[in-house]
Image (cartoon, rainbow, N blue to C red; front, side, top):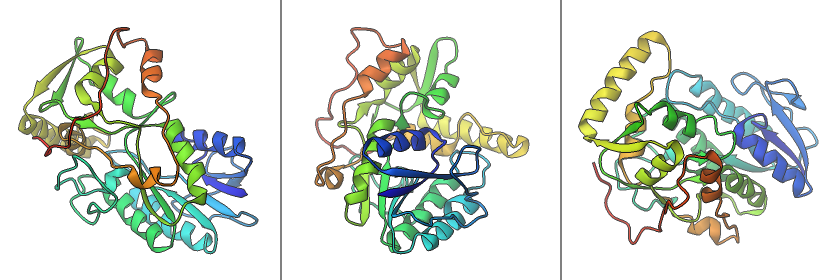
Length: 306
C-alpha cells in the first residue's frame, strides 16, 4: 500500500518508516521538518493524503510540561481523521490515556480512559484516542517506549542520578515497557487489524528498581510516595513560572510509584509477537553488570502500591 506516515522524523516514526519500507509499502512522510515528503503542521494544517491508501499516525505533542497539546493532539486529530475518511488508519495513542485511579496491575483495553489524567499530555491523548476510535481507526496504546535514540525515558532517568544514586517513589513495582522496534512492528501489522484499541508492550513486565539500576548504573534508593508527590508539586509550580519542563511531576511520580502492566492479549490474538529486545538494549548501554538478572515475569497481578 501507499502509506502516509506522520511523525516520521521522530524516534518512533523513524522506526516505523524503516519497517514499513521493509514490508514493501510505499511511504509518504508528513511533517514540519525539512525532508518530509509533504509539509504538515499538526497544530494548524489539514494533511494532504492524496494518493494514499492508509495512514499511520505517530505525530504528537509529547511531554510533561508546557506544550501545544490541545492543538496537536486534539485539533490536529480532528483534521487528520477528516482528511483520512475512507482510508485505513493506524492511530498511535498511549497508555497514558488510562485513568490512574483504578488498579493498573493488569490493564486491558476496557480500562477507563475518560478522566483522572495527571497531565495535559494524558488528557489530550485520551481525547484524540476517542476521536480515532469513533472514526473506526485501529488505535495502538504503547507503554514507555525505549530503544536506541530514545529522547525521553533514558535521558530522564539519567538526569535523576545524584552522586551515584537515584531516588524512586515507594516500593519496587512492576512496569510494562515496549521497545521502539516492537512498537514499529505493531504499526505495520495493525494495517491489517480490525478497528479498535490494542495494548502494545514487550513480552513481560519488568521490575522497576532492577531496570533503573541497569539503565543508569546507579544505586536505587526509595523515598515515601507522599514526599515525592510534595516535591513534584513544588517543582511543577516553579516550572510554571520559568516555563521549563520540571524534572519531577505528579504524573511522573504516578508512573513510577504503581504497578502498570498492560494486557496484550488482544494484539497477540492477531498473531503479533514482541521480540525480546530489552537485554540487548541494556547491554548496549554499558551500565548493566554482566551477571545482572533483570527481570522475571510477575507471578500474579497485585493491587497498586503507594
